[in-house]
Image (cartoon, rainbow, N blue to C red; front, side, top):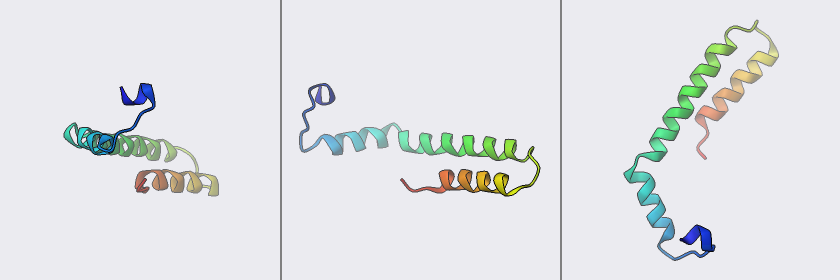
Length: 68
């Protein structure tokens, strides 16, 4: 086991990427994150308008749109 033994082989990264792609893990993770962001936006609507609420909306947008 590569992780357990702390050993890396040249093709390990390609294998990991292949597994993530095959099982649509990245897509599912992005979809889940978007769902949580939508829930956060809905809950934030309950608070009165304020600079703090606006900052929280900005934070949610940042999390939803970040590329890393």
